[in-house]
Length: 435
Image 1 (cartoon, rainbow, N blue to C red):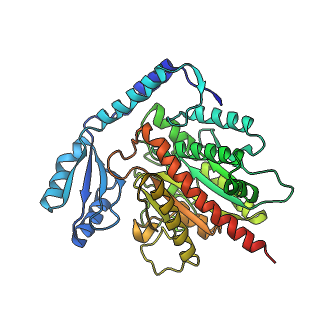
Image 2 (tube, rainbow, N blue to C red; image 1 turned 45 degrees about the vertical axis):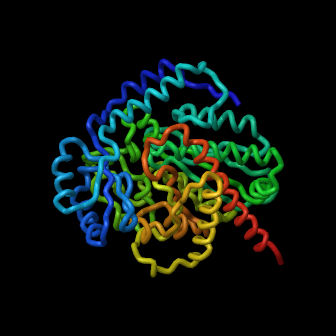
Image 3 (cartoon, one colour; image 1 turned 90 degrees about the vertical axis):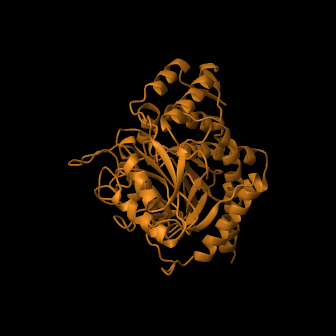
């Protein structure tokens, strides 16, 4: 498949002149060794909100948190950890050095390419390239693929979906998958594109399970839910997380789209502070990126049924299901066993592919509570039986700056997991249709 790509020189200019730099920013890995450590670190997080950026949270004693600390807070932050005997070390000593290396790798690869190439699924792509890929992919796979605009972002960009499914005179239930809700998590859109590719290839090659998946369901896959933020990470700030809207009266720009859903909005783990990375926005579903998508899904649930809602993030290697808004496992969850069992089976498929372990659990009790999250809306409001948040690679070293060499193995293990998910959906659909 052909794709119109940016000229290498122009791209190098964009990557080299990002407005925000991270000179001498450190990423500190912190490991609680006791329940007292865990409690103290929870308080530290609350007190330091807006000063440091939590990349990853420790889910239990012995696991780790990764925290990006700007230079002017490092002495005080590190002194606090040492004074309280909290295990920690520098995961990244100078974040800008890592960003520069990543930029040079991308730029060098682009300089060696021609202006129009066969589309490469094993590299990161700009938003314009992703848009062009969607159009090109649909043109070449019109027997199973169509392009749909589900919403429009604050800055006027399209929130695009590819629908994969065989034409049918009757309405089919929907399986919905989205990526790129957090701008800096580049592996998510890359994995979504690779997943579309693998589904189409396997359908065309006659894979009976994939054929059943696309014959039975319409699969809507959104590579980039947050196009403004994603574009901003290429042009201005590689570490940007939120969208790019600044509501009137706010000090800072951006809303965390994964704290903005209309389920337990404004609860624990979300912030009313517009400068926080976890800012929940002025109201539930206040953001244009969400409005069109959620309206579309609710309409599909009413007419055809939505059986699957999945939201792909990075990083940490987690496969999580509701509830996310609470830390209690005692809250009723009608499909708990089925949600857990399918997630475990998906995790086994991941493990069998490249020997990677994904932790399976409830997002609130087993990771950390967060109100207004997508998985709770998908299950509690949309009514999709299977609603998940997946945190992709990696677990230990790279964080949000996963090298391009890991795109393909990440996508391969997720495709293996999605075949397990698809088989369950197909089997349950067949059982439901039997008289």
